[in-house]
Structure formats: structure tokens, C-alpha cells
Amino acid sequence: MQLKFWTIVAGFLAIAGPGSAATITVKNESGEPLAQVMVTRNHVERPAQNLSDDGYTPHAVTNQTATSVTRFTNALGQVKFSDVPDAVTYRARAQGYVDATFASTEDEVVLNAMTSDQLVASYPSNVWLSQMTFGGDIELKKHFQLNCAFCHQQASAFMRNERTIDQWLAVFERMNGYGARLANDDQENIAELLQKEYRELREHPEVIPQPRTWEPHLSSVDITEWPIGDGFSQMHDFLLHPNGHVYVGDNLFDRIYEIDPDTGDYTVYKVPHPESAQVGGILGNRFTVFPKMHNYMGVHSFAYSRKDGHIFITPSMQQALLEFNPDTKEFTTHWMPEGFYPHTIRVDQKDRVWFTLAVSSQVAMFDRSNGEFSFYDLPARGFKEGFIISALPLIFWMDPENRPIPDPDRDGNGLPMPYGIDVAPDGIIWTARLYANDLARIDPETDEVTMIDFPYQGPRRLRIDAQGNLWIVAFQDSLLVKYDPKQNVFTDYELPVINEIPYSLNIDKKRNVVWVTGNQSDTLLSFDIATEAWKVYPLPRQRFFTRDIEISEDDGAVYTTNSHFPTWQSEGGEPTLLRLAPLEEEVIHKAED
Image (cartoon, rainbow, N blue to C red; front, side, top):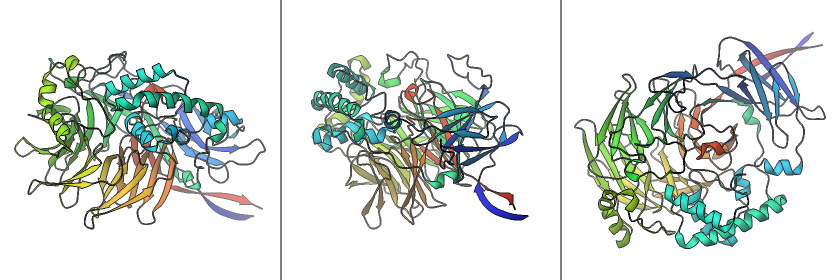
């Protein structure tokens, strides 16, 4: 007997108590093995949970979520799961094949090919959106994407349904009330184009291009999901903390989810608010059509202090900064004397907390040593914008029902919107203004503010690598952009999927990899800085919309949350925390004569 050895990438991530291993082989109707099949393991029954607080976990109560695990078949059509709980089911999903759900007792499954109609319906939103021309007006399409694709996917099955012109206009009015800035002068035209071009795509789906093919590197990863919240939640930003827990903020219900990835246990902490606070905070209640809402503060972005581990959170609907002690579970609210819409947040090397103020076009700094705030005003682009920004204290003094709101236009006049922010290795603070298409450089030692034109459209979130280079997503230009501040040089990189609208990114500084959100294509995208090579990782749920990325320094695992708004449009109808991690290698010995 002769032994033949080969390596099959498999995993050792235990999500429950000890159990049996399962090796599943996936084939097509001809009996041929299928590689790169996404196989997801789910629990048959979920753990009992205390959801007595309006359908949510009460304050300081611990529940356990039902963890799901996804892996991809190798070249032999095989996928292995270790430590399998007793009662599980599997779903197999492959490009061009109908999903199959089967019991844990089956070790082989056959997938049936899709019909042509099923095939095009299964395509992610980005390929449908790629064929929307907006009458050949590319700038109009970019304006639409900037304002209508930062909460949910466009061209999804929900969006491309037949609507009348008036129905589209009603949608625009509601979305602008939520925070979009779709220009008044363009709305009638856009409504007509959406009705016309969506109808043409439904009637002629053969023009839709195929999405990117899933590739062999997928067999070396493990995807774990932890469902939290419900169909009304919005799991916005989050934080991977050095204590091993992940802290996720439900923006619409002012809750912090403290999740233990090792056990699936999670504890919820409700953010306190003043008794006089109203739903919607100082912005007013913009979500009156929602069945339930609890966003008095508006949990937004997270950062932690490397000095004591305290977590700092921006409450976008108040003039404040939140501090959470993960040891005592106590919240502290630091009230600000000025500034509107605290947004993205970072902590610098001197333990100072920096964050953008999106509406008032400022950057704030909270000095923990004396408890004082400093504010950096970013310049207006013209007289009109300067007048609007200077009038904000008066505008916000008025009742939300009676506030004058500037008419939105394509340039975002009055709302340059400082958005992403990060701290460079040399201590310089960098931020990007989404509507102004520029960058701000702040020197904390001199308080000097320098503005730099961004030669692309839609600089949303940014991160800085170990060499001091800025990496920025150009939202409506569908680009990853690097800025070298030493050379004052921009370099752009096309994304590996068409018509993607990247929201955020993060950098694995240890492995020199940039990770980008693939919000239209249900993916995460990785870019190797040294080789300039992309890899694409499809995610287990359709309409998976991500706003933030965290990376484990230890093993390079990537975390994100499904933050599609409304969540009920996402497959499964609930948000999840997701981890994409590398698998360890297992050598399988096979004996042959």
C-alpha cells in the first residue's frame, strides 16, 4: 500500500462544545465536484434569549446568539467543519446554481443549475447598477450614488421594482428628510430615469454582465457570523477591543453590544440620555414612519484609549462625546459647547480624542488630561456656505419642525461634511470632506490647518498606513486612492468589481494589506500594497452593507457588520457581526493501492 499526501485547507474554529467533524462534498448534476461553493452551517434552533425590552436584550443582560459558519469547497468539491453541534443544517450556494439546504446527516449534495432568469436575478446589485446610464449623464449618476447609496444598495431586487414618478419623488423626499442631499433640481429627471431604465433592465436582463467569478483563495478562509438586534436595528460602527470583545453600536436604538467571539455570548448596554432629550436628539425625529425608535443620542463611531482601554463614542444626535469604561460598564457624557453631528473618531498617541463634526464643518479634540475641548474650523468654500455654517447655532436653536433647511444642490453647498479622520505616525491629524472633495491636515502642535484638493469625488473614510500614506475611498468614483503627503502625490487603483461604491476601509499594517468594503457587491475586498493585487471575498448574505472594518493584529482576521438600512431588506432580515479569518492547514492522508 502506498501513501499519497496532499494538503486540503480546512479549519479548527470551535463554536460550540466538542462534537463530530463533518466533511461535505458538493457536485453538479453530472457528478463533477464543484469548487468554491459557499457552504454555511446554521443552528436548527437558536438559544433562548431574554428580549423583554421592546424586542431587545435589556440593559446589562447577557444572551447567547446563534453563530453561523461559512466555508468554501476546495478543488475536490470538499469542505470540512470541525466540532459540529448536534442540530445543524447547511446551505450550499454557488454561482450559477440553485441554493440547496440539507441536513447535517448528508455528506454529499448535488446542486442544480439555475435557469437564465434565476441566474440574472441572483446577481449582486453592482452589476445591475453598472447598466444604469442615467441618460448618458455620468455626473448625474454620481450625484445619485453619492446621496442614495450610503445606507443601502441601489439596483437591488427591492429597488428595481416598478414605481411611478410620484412614488419615486416621495421616496426622495423621505430620504432627504433622513439626511440625503439629492438636488431639488434633479429629482424629477432622476425619477423619470429610474422608472425608465429599471424597466428596460427588467425587460432585457440579458444585458446585465456577469459578476466576478469566485476564486480558489476562498477555500482558505472561514467566515463566522453572530446575529444581533432585529430588522429595525442599524449596527453602524464597531470596535475590536484588546480585551477580546467586539463592541457594536446600534445607531437607531442607542445600544452597545459587547460580544465575546469565543462563546457567542453578548451583553447589551443602553446609552443613557438626559430626561429632557427627545427621540432624534437635537436633529429631531426624522423616522416618524418607523414602528419603533430609541435614538436619543445616536451611537455612531468608536475608538479606544491605549492608556486605559476606555472606549470613546460619537453620539451624532447630540453635542457631546461619550466615554464607556469596559471594566465598570459605566458611561460618562462629556458635553460640548459647540459643534454639530459628531461623526468619525480616533485617539492619538498622546491620548487625545479627535473626531469630525460633519454638519458644522469642524474637527474637535478632547484633551483627557484637563477635560477640555478644542475646535478646528475648516474653511467654507464660499460666502453662501460660510453664511449657512455660521447660522447653524441659530438654526439648531429653533424647533426641529420649524427649522429652515437649505435647498440641496449638486455641490452640497452649506454641507462640506468632514467625514473620515485618522492620526498619522507623526501625530498629524488628517480628515476628508465628503461633499467638498478635499482633505484637511491639522498640526496639533501649531494648530495650523492646511487644505488639500482631492482630485476625485467622494472622499468618505480614510486610514493611514505605517509609512504615513493616506488611503482613501473615492465613493462615487469607485476607486481606492493613496495619497503620499511627503511627495504630495495621489495614486488611484480601480476596484476589482464593477460599479462598486466603497464606503470605508482599514489597513492591516502588519501584513501590508488594505481592506475595502464592497457594499454593492456583497463582498469584502483586499488589496496587497506591495503587489497591487486584489482579492475578492463574497459574503454569505445578499444585500450585505458594511460601514466599518476592524482587523485583528494577531492573525489578520477581518471584522465587519451588516449595516444595511433598512436591515429587513438584507437577506435574513437581521444584522450580524461578521469575521473573515484565515484557516489553519490540516493534512489528510489518503491510502491508495
